[in-house]
Length: 248
Image (tube, rainbow, N blue to C red; front, side):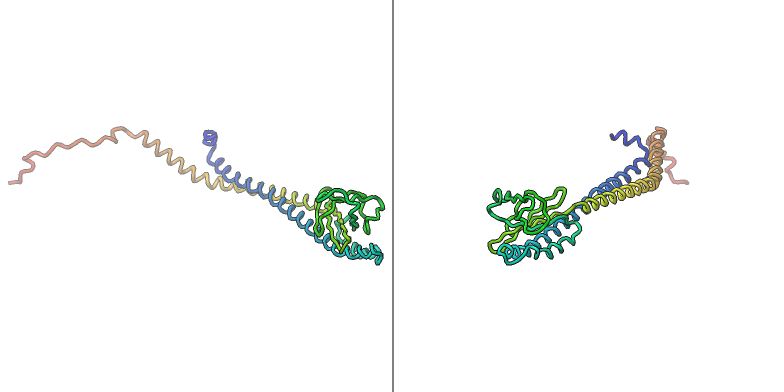
């Protein structure tokens, strides 16, 4: 690997040194930030859905107790669910009366099997299905083709389960849009990184090439210098006594 790198020109080496970090940063930005935005959108949708379901369960429990006692009509819940349906993602909603005799299982696996035209659905348009029951005063979410939120509430001896089902189509569209934006960011960053690599490779390679040529020329000059120039000079003969005598 080192030998292959050494065979490359200085301009190519400088271009690779600039391009590789640019490509890595661009790929990281294109993958991380769209995924982060999608996660934030999913968390916001789930938080909003839970808040709506909790509000609906808290307000529906007293009315359902009056309906069970014969002091109110199920239609009194219409205004509540009309307000819920202002959310464009809500596809179906309903409030179920939790009769202990009809519940299956125990603990977290407790469920109510809702049939068609079942009287257990006090109000709403929920389809026949098996609905897991959340613990009293809590909410449980299930995400699949849709986002299902189930919140339970109790008013004295009457327990209810509010089920809200949200479509994830808009969320999927937003996720695709974020991914497309991430791809555009990737292409733009790659183009910018390659352009910078070309510019900086020339700017870096030119002075490095000059320094390299000078170093090679200096080594070549040292290797071709004569051997005599490296010898120590011979000693001169000592002066004679006559030359040291003072003149007369």
